[in-house]
Length: 341
View 1 (spheres, rainbow, N blue to C red):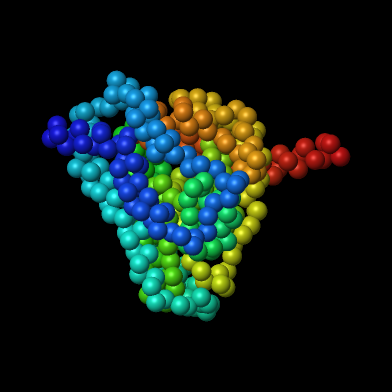
View 2: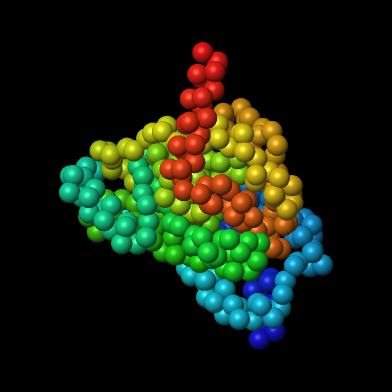
């Protein structure tokens, strides 16, 4: 049992390097005629794990790992099983690209989209459709196809509300694993109907998910940088399936942009972040995106406290119904307009 627990601990901090890197590096080397990031693209948040993993692990340090060994005993086998499922999902996301060979369809009829939506619901996934801007492809990454089916899967509220305890971390890992599996199933669904597909796994990924999901009309990023949706609040993980289907029914919308204004007047996540990683004033980047998180403060705490998730737990959209928050926000906005008029 002790060896099993040590395996779980050791994999938690370096899992991105050990799981993603071999498959991703091989894919990027072979992806010669792909859609690349542009000059305004941002690096992936975990890029520090790839560029200087030893420094990051040294900064984390074993002495800082807040672990309850007795609690880990009950979940160690499950955690290893989930990590293995994630590894298999990431591997499949890259190796299954070979299954696109010979597929030539690029136009779908209306019945296909209804079948796809039904299939997504059967796999506990909410989907949106959009075209991928190059500046949302992470710096140094590439994708095969210009259109995206963006996927969102809920993390259970009862588990996330235990953050930053182990149960919340296990729930987060569970959704990474199950969403990765669902994304691969949706890609297979597309291929079975004659369409090419490429999966971007929820762990790691090739694009900036919150902004891509916002473009697809699923929600809008909060001050903590996480997507907030009407159905799940901030409590979801995201993935994407890229395809070259030409008549994709884009769901682009800005109807959720009011969330940004609400968050700028809230700041609960800023106050409650255990590591002080959420910036009081976001940094506006040259490409128009915003940096809201200090990764050097976030990642060490994230890696040593079961994925943290405190910002999700304290977010008003996790505590209250989305519709009630929107109603109150709109009422206050109307009152301000009346007084100013």
